[in-house]
Image (cartoon, rainbow, N blue to C red; front, side, top):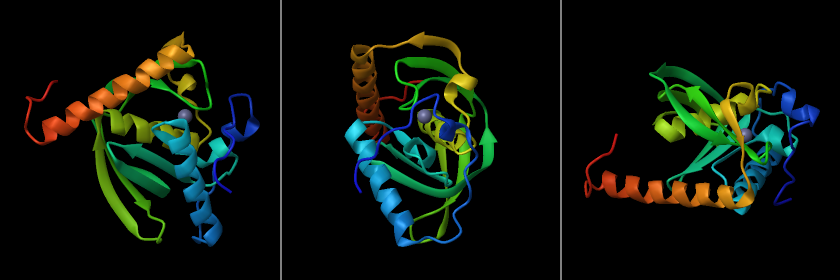
Length: 181
Ligand code: ZN
């Protein structure tokens, strides 16, 4: 199918609880492909199935060139907390601060149906928690404080800042600059 239409706040589907995927059929694989394509097209970090109108527990997050395809994802451990300024494809024009765990361990299935576990911290942890909330009908605006209006130019600036942070983190990983806290 390709790029899908994003459901926006006010659409009932965003408020429903998604069902676990029992069998990974070709339709599920196609759904994952469409989610990836839509994510790329919109230059966003994450997308959850209900955002494109499918009530299944599937989310895709792309961060620092790593792509996380999560089927039936579960957070199995959390540690610490931090506040991240979040925005959402389904809530255009707004951003807000959301407190979430600083570190999480996620268990999910990949598109081959194999279980895998990985950990995420900082921005990535927030992004994954945000997407997993969508699977339970929760929007970031339910949890956010300091909600502000954001225009398209500000949204573009956010994306540029995100990419810059990504570059910095890449350098830090290679040990080229001291880690900033
Ligand atoms: Zn969202």
